[in-house]
Length: 177
Image (cartoon, rainbow, N blue to C red; front, side, top):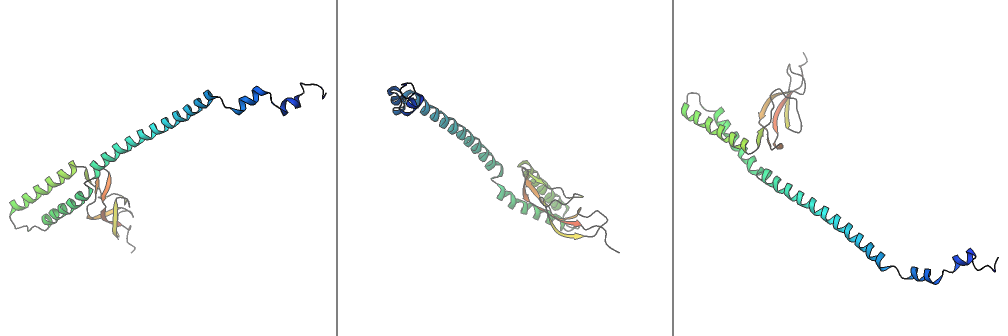
């Protein structure tokens, strides 16, 4: 068998010259196709990344327009609170036209804030929500525990995002006798 020139061990041991040449120098066409595929994959990846960047940039601009005046809105809420305090402590025997004028200004102020996305947080007979309410105390009451029984300061959201939590008193349930 060793005399047989077509022996499989001899073919595996020493490749023929055309096979050796094929392994020694890669096919330039195959190499270019490989580089083209890599370049296409990079292009598709970069294109997708750029599209995501554009979408993020648009959303960030919208959020800036929507929430960019959050600090100003917080400051204006203090002014609205002061208007409401002035109305609460207005003398009953004082000038009724002054009180009426203050009420109109406070209503106009509140309506303007609402047009800009500021909304009041509901508290009356609501369950306490720590994401929207700040508990400042508990009161025994006939209402179930965890229900808001008193509001100390109004809370507000700006386009659904918490601007200022409502400060509330919550029920601790019925008092023990």
